[in-house]
Image (cartoon, rainbow, N blue to C red):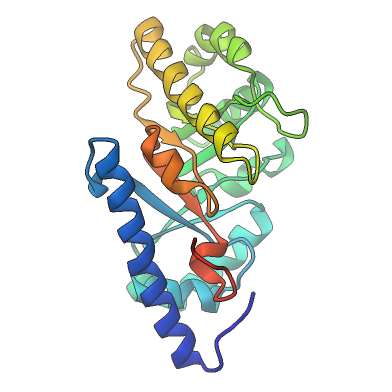
Length: 244
């Protein structure tokens, strides 16, 4: 991360950048016939430390995303030093190994990356053992890229009955990632996720009201295509990232 010349300068950068981001979100939401309030934001803090998370909180961010359980633990310990952050939200956005599930459940508001029936079943088993219900998103590889994980659209459709039968998890929506630096393919990916959610709502009766898609390079496109939750890392924290 490229830090500003001073702590005060970095704090000013975080505030100014947040205002710029929220303006872009409002503009994109307006283009899709929605309001900025229809789109939640997640500051992806996986590459920064607890101090940067606290500074981002002071700048107005209230929800953060982590992709490693051990990093989540470090951030939670850092938050404990700041009582004013008692209401902070953390989500798990990265690949989750089954042997790390117990480090995550109960500590995050939402698991974005349920990528298989096996993982869903493992989360269900551990959540039930602790008397919890975990809110989750199903990760769908809409673009079909081999480098990306998740259900294919056909696989998630076929698995819905089994997934809905699992106790201890609540399926809140879908998540996807788009091809990097390819705006047209990204738009097709995001619209494909929206269309899949619409179809699954009709088939299952689930609300599926969370569509987690859009990152630093493509979040306006994602919002235009129906995203309700964008995951923003570099654009939030790096003063070397140019907001195009």
